Length: 228
Length: 228
DNA sequence: ATACACAATAATGTATGCAAAATGCAATCA
DNA sequence: TGATTGCATTTTGCATACATTATTGTGTAT
Image 1 (cartoon, rainbow over the protein chains, first blue to last red):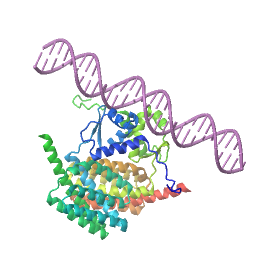
Image 2 (image 1 turned 180 degrees about the vertical axis):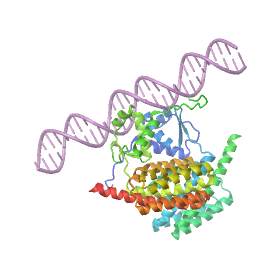
Image 3 (image 1 turned 45 degrees about the vertical axis):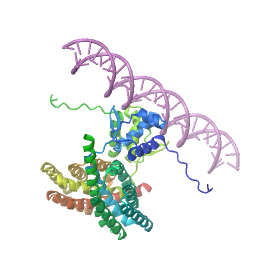
Image 4 (image 1 turned 90 degrees about the horizontal axis):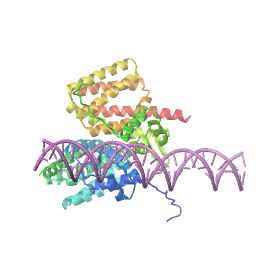
């Protein structure tokens, strides 16, 4: 270690740490939707007492990642079709805003990074590598969201993103939809390169509407299967 | 009480109740920004123990209504100019979306209510009654937000609204800005009556941008005074 | 056999107690 | 006189104990 770095000592409180860990577990899918999560079990899992765990659960409940039923504990929130119809238009409006702001602030470094991610994504598309496609896709959206330079916006976007993230992986895109999505992304890149915020915003809104339809269809299919 | 009302028995937990009460205190201004709020004092005030109070504080911290400094307690969040620049564009995007959705769902009853609130607001404008103007203004925006029929959107809007509400009352609108705001509201009403969602959305975005400028100016003035 | 009632159990909700960190104050030294 | 260090006090962080509410399992009556 260099002597002049003197990096600040980070000492996080347990509840903060727990919020992050639990959120990851839920968003990544280790805790399946509908799962009951008794405090006691979580406490044992993380080796903490109930006090900080409860504080964390309250926060996650407020984020709508879990449902807190009074006197009956917490359940990992399920994503319904109605939720999809609610959340995606909001994400569309926010991504459109992020796109506009990102155009205004765009640095060459970030544009290069986005170009690289886009190229990698196209590669995955050519190879029909859906999971790779999703990964690079996510990077692009994250880069744009960060480039917007609005921490509050980023926080809200991440919150909504967390709620729908798992469902998005269910989405078995049709070849048709996939081709459309790629075309939209090419337009996005072009708008970015032209620093055309208004156009980028419009594209992103349309893009999110497409995502909404895809995810909703996948969710309806999943629900139908579950009902069998 | 009528026998057939059978209103559901609401038994809220203390932390839920506390979140609401504290939020009201902060948003309404009873707890001034910058005020330190020691747990002990709040507990004494509400006659509860520290556990539910801490759970409530964590939630409010996550809402950005208070700043939670590790090992140093909670401070009622101050609204900076940067915050205004961050929050208002987001509110603009969300109100625009709400406006579009509201146009799609608009009922005659709600339109009538909005017309009434608008008329009352115009009356206040004529009388130079700023606080009455704000009250009716808020009603209009709430009616539109509710008419959007998107609970998630409403929740996010309310959260952001809470953060800037107090600052908005600082705004001593110039005659010029006030006239512009009224004109924008007339356009909004016209767009609503025409069920023209796209136009309403555009107006609301512009309207919020105007609000941003006004509030920011007021905030800068307040900060300058405080610095003296 | 089913349905209801009641008790036993387990979970959540709340309060309190202990440990650790931060603040304020005073004493000491330059 | 001013700054710094050490201690006392206060406050937060966490754990545990108690209270209250749901759940479930069993027994009894129909």
